[in-house]
Length: 170
Image (cartoon, rainbow, N blue to C red; front, side):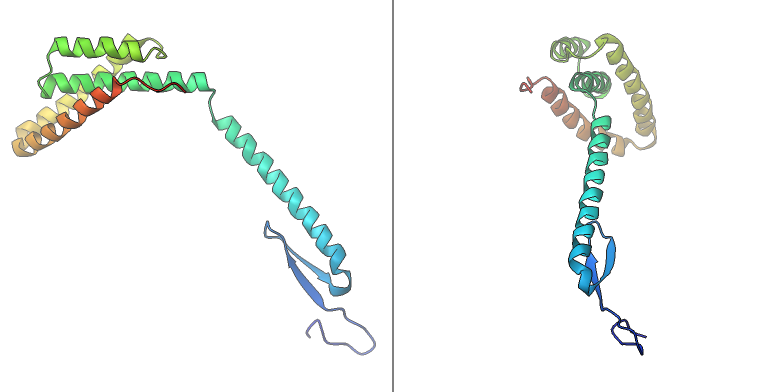
């Protein structure tokens, strides 16, 4: 039986379907649809307000304080720079003096890093592991090794030069 048909002796009001922005459906008799619309809007606004406040709290809890974020970034940059330096010395022909100069310049730029020398050594050791893998590639596939080293040397030199550029203040 459809909602708009009359049954003998009863009056059935037609149903009006209203939709909330949040997706909740609300059915109300047509005669009271103004009241239903207001109730539905209140429900929608409450739902959206609650969702917005939960989202805001989530975002705020996941974002580290700016000082901590810059320290973590500087620490990661220091380790990557140590790894890069090891690669440049082993495969790109950089001298130990060049690496020492690079390290000294970088330590003046990455002042936020906690314990620069320890972070550098961690990266340097990671570079040793990478060098062992590349040397194995050199024995097994000299042509692929030469191609990879040539491409990586260009990229690593550019990254090293880029890391020494002064950063704009935030």
